[in-house]
Length: 208
Image (cartoon, rainbow, N blue to C red):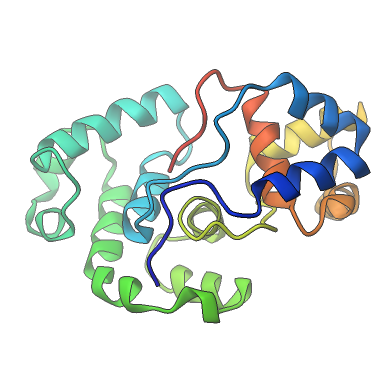
Protein backbone atom coordinates (compact mmCIF):
# COMPACT_ATOMS: atom_id res chain seq x y z
CA UNK A 1 0.00 0.00 0.00
CA UNK A 2 1.26 3.47 -0.87
CA UNK A 3 0.87 5.66 2.19
CA UNK A 4 -0.74 9.07 1.67
CA UNK A 5 0.99 12.43 1.82
CA UNK A 6 -2.10 14.52 1.07
CA UNK A 7 -5.24 15.15 3.11
CA UNK A 8 -7.57 12.22 3.94
CA UNK A 9 -10.49 11.66 1.58
CA UNK A 10 -12.83 11.55 4.58
CA UNK A 11 -11.77 14.94 6.02
CA UNK A 12 -14.74 17.08 4.97
CA UNK A 13 -17.22 14.37 6.00
CA UNK A 14 -15.53 14.26 9.38
CA UNK A 15 -15.89 18.01 9.89
CA UNK A 16 -19.59 17.86 8.99
CA UNK A 17 -20.12 15.03 11.48
CA UNK A 18 -18.22 16.73 14.30
CA UNK A 19 -20.03 20.03 13.82
CA UNK A 20 -23.34 18.19 13.99
CA UNK A 21 -22.67 16.17 17.15
CA UNK A 22 -20.51 18.53 19.24
CA UNK A 23 -21.29 22.28 19.40
CA UNK A 24 -18.19 22.96 21.52
CA UNK A 25 -15.85 21.26 19.07
CA UNK A 26 -17.69 22.94 16.21
CA UNK A 27 -16.58 26.33 17.53
CA UNK A 28 -12.97 25.12 17.67
CA UNK A 29 -13.17 23.87 14.08
CA UNK A 30 -14.55 27.23 12.95
CA UNK A 31 -11.85 29.15 14.81
CA UNK A 32 -8.85 27.25 13.44
CA UNK A 33 -7.49 28.00 10.01
CA UNK A 34 -6.69 25.18 7.66
CA UNK A 35 -4.66 23.38 6.24
CA UNK A 36 -6.21 20.04 7.18
CA UNK A 37 -4.38 16.97 8.43
CA UNK A 38 -1.43 16.00 6.27
CA UNK A 39 1.54 13.73 6.81
CA UNK A 40 5.00 12.89 5.54
CA UNK A 41 3.49 9.88 3.78
CA UNK A 42 6.05 7.15 4.42
CA UNK A 43 5.24 5.01 7.44
CA UNK A 44 8.90 4.56 8.41
CA UNK A 45 9.65 8.29 8.28
CA UNK A 46 6.49 9.05 10.26
CA UNK A 47 7.39 6.56 12.98
CA UNK A 48 10.93 7.93 13.23
CA UNK A 49 9.70 11.52 13.33
CA UNK A 50 7.27 10.62 16.12
CA UNK A 51 10.06 8.97 18.11
CA UNK A 52 12.20 12.10 17.80
CA UNK A 53 9.28 14.20 19.05
CA UNK A 54 8.52 12.13 22.14
CA UNK A 55 8.51 13.95 25.50
CA UNK A 56 9.98 17.21 24.17
CA UNK A 57 8.46 20.44 22.90
CA UNK A 58 7.37 20.75 19.28
CA UNK A 59 10.01 23.43 18.73
CA UNK A 60 12.79 21.23 20.10
CA UNK A 61 11.54 18.25 18.10
CA UNK A 62 11.54 20.26 14.87
CA UNK A 63 15.09 21.45 15.52
CA UNK A 64 16.39 17.95 16.23
CA UNK A 65 14.59 16.48 13.23
CA UNK A 66 16.08 19.15 10.97
CA UNK A 67 19.59 18.42 12.26
CA UNK A 68 18.95 14.70 11.90
CA UNK A 69 17.88 15.04 8.25
CA UNK A 70 20.82 17.36 7.53
CA UNK A 71 23.15 14.77 9.09
CA UNK A 72 21.68 12.11 6.78
CA UNK A 73 22.48 14.23 3.73
CA UNK A 74 19.30 16.23 3.30
CA UNK A 75 16.76 13.43 3.05
CA UNK A 76 15.70 10.48 5.16
CA UNK A 77 17.59 7.28 4.40
CA UNK A 78 17.03 4.28 6.67
CA UNK A 79 20.27 2.61 5.54
CA UNK A 80 22.28 5.67 6.58
CA UNK A 81 20.60 5.62 10.00
CA UNK A 82 21.69 2.00 10.43
CA UNK A 83 25.24 2.80 9.32
CA UNK A 84 25.61 5.80 11.65
CA UNK A 85 27.31 5.32 15.00
CA UNK A 86 25.72 6.34 18.27
CA UNK A 87 28.16 9.16 18.95
CA UNK A 88 27.30 10.88 15.67
CA UNK A 89 23.57 10.55 16.25
CA UNK A 90 23.94 11.80 19.81
CA UNK A 91 25.52 14.87 18.28
CA UNK A 92 22.25 15.92 16.63
CA UNK A 93 20.44 15.78 19.97
CA UNK A 94 19.10 12.22 20.14
CA UNK A 95 19.13 10.18 23.34
CA UNK A 96 20.54 6.65 23.43
CA UNK A 97 17.06 5.16 23.80
CA UNK A 98 15.73 7.12 20.84
CA UNK A 99 18.72 6.09 18.73
CA UNK A 100 18.11 2.44 19.54
CA UNK A 101 14.43 2.83 18.64
CA UNK A 102 15.21 4.65 15.38
CA UNK A 103 17.65 1.94 14.36
CA UNK A 104 15.05 -0.71 15.18
CA UNK A 105 12.49 0.99 12.97
CA UNK A 106 15.01 1.41 10.15
CA UNK A 107 16.09 -2.21 10.46
CA UNK A 108 12.42 -3.14 9.88
CA UNK A 109 11.92 -0.58 7.09
CA UNK A 110 11.57 -3.04 4.21
CA UNK A 111 9.15 -5.17 6.22
CA UNK A 112 7.04 -2.17 7.28
CA UNK A 113 6.85 -0.82 3.73
CA UNK A 114 5.70 -4.17 2.30
CA UNK A 115 2.71 -4.51 4.60
CA UNK A 116 -0.76 -4.04 3.13
CA UNK A 117 -1.97 -1.79 5.95
CA UNK A 118 -5.45 -1.49 4.43
CA UNK A 119 -6.04 -5.13 5.27
CA UNK A 120 -5.14 -4.71 8.95
CA UNK A 121 -7.26 -3.65 11.91
CA UNK A 122 -6.10 -0.90 14.26
CA UNK A 123 -5.16 -3.49 16.87
CA UNK A 124 -3.21 -5.53 14.32
CA UNK A 125 -1.33 -2.44 13.14
CA UNK A 126 -0.45 -1.48 16.70
CA UNK A 127 0.72 -5.01 17.48
CA UNK A 128 3.00 -5.06 14.42
CA UNK A 129 4.53 -1.68 15.16
CA UNK A 130 5.01 -2.14 18.89
CA UNK A 131 6.99 -5.34 18.37
CA UNK A 132 9.87 -3.02 17.46
CA UNK A 133 11.94 -2.14 20.52
CA UNK A 134 11.01 1.24 21.94
CA UNK A 135 7.90 1.73 19.82
CA UNK A 136 4.90 2.21 22.08
CA UNK A 137 1.19 2.76 21.44
CA UNK A 138 1.59 6.53 21.01
CA UNK A 139 4.17 6.18 18.22
CA UNK A 140 1.97 3.61 16.49
CA UNK A 141 -1.02 5.93 16.81
CA UNK A 142 0.91 8.82 15.26
CA UNK A 143 1.73 6.55 12.31
CA UNK A 144 -1.92 5.56 12.00
CA UNK A 145 -2.96 9.23 12.04
CA UNK A 146 -0.28 10.87 9.90
CA UNK A 147 0.84 8.12 7.53
CA UNK A 148 -2.06 5.70 7.23
CA UNK A 149 -4.74 8.38 7.75
CA UNK A 150 -7.04 6.13 9.78
CA UNK A 151 -10.13 8.17 10.68
CA UNK A 152 -10.91 7.00 14.20
CA UNK A 153 -7.75 7.19 16.33
CA UNK A 154 -7.86 8.56 19.89
CA UNK A 155 -4.35 8.59 21.43
CA UNK A 156 -4.98 8.23 25.15
CA UNK A 157 -1.25 8.62 25.77
CA UNK A 158 -1.14 12.11 24.28
CA UNK A 159 -1.15 14.59 27.14
CA UNK A 160 -2.13 17.48 24.85
CA UNK A 161 -5.26 15.66 23.72
CA UNK A 162 -6.20 14.65 27.26
CA UNK A 163 -5.76 18.15 28.68
CA UNK A 164 -7.79 19.59 25.80
CA UNK A 165 -10.67 17.20 26.43
CA UNK A 166 -10.58 18.05 30.14
CA UNK A 167 -10.75 21.72 29.17
CA UNK A 168 -13.78 21.04 26.97
CA UNK A 169 -15.53 19.59 30.00
CA UNK A 170 -14.28 22.29 32.35
CA UNK A 171 -13.08 19.72 34.85
CA UNK A 172 -9.85 18.51 36.40
CA UNK A 173 -8.15 15.22 35.66
CA UNK A 174 -10.25 12.66 33.77
CA UNK A 175 -9.48 8.94 33.62
CA UNK A 176 -9.33 6.93 30.41
CA UNK A 177 -12.92 5.71 30.74
CA UNK A 178 -14.19 9.27 31.09
CA UNK A 179 -12.10 10.41 28.13
CA UNK A 180 -13.44 7.58 25.99
CA UNK A 181 -17.00 8.37 27.02
CA UNK A 182 -16.57 12.07 26.15
CA UNK A 183 -15.09 11.20 22.76
CA UNK A 184 -17.69 8.59 21.88
CA UNK A 185 -19.86 11.07 19.95
CA UNK A 186 -16.91 11.83 17.66
CA UNK A 187 -16.88 8.30 16.24
CA UNK A 188 -16.07 7.34 13.52
CA UNK A 189 -13.93 10.47 13.12
CA UNK A 190 -12.00 10.84 16.36
CA UNK A 191 -8.80 11.49 14.39
CA UNK A 192 -10.30 14.71 13.03
CA UNK A 193 -11.39 15.77 16.52
CA UNK A 194 -7.89 15.11 17.86
CA UNK A 195 -6.40 17.19 15.05
CA UNK A 196 -8.49 20.21 15.97
CA UNK A 197 -7.72 19.80 19.66
CA UNK A 198 -4.04 20.00 18.73
CA UNK A 199 -4.57 22.89 16.32
CA UNK A 200 -6.24 25.16 18.84
CA UNK A 201 -2.96 25.28 20.80
CA UNK A 202 -0.36 25.11 18.01
CA UNK A 203 0.40 27.97 15.63
CA UNK A 204 1.82 25.50 13.13
CA UNK A 205 0.01 22.28 12.19
CA UNK A 206 1.37 19.10 13.75
CA UNK A 207 3.21 17.02 11.16
CA UNK A 208 4.78 13.58 11.52
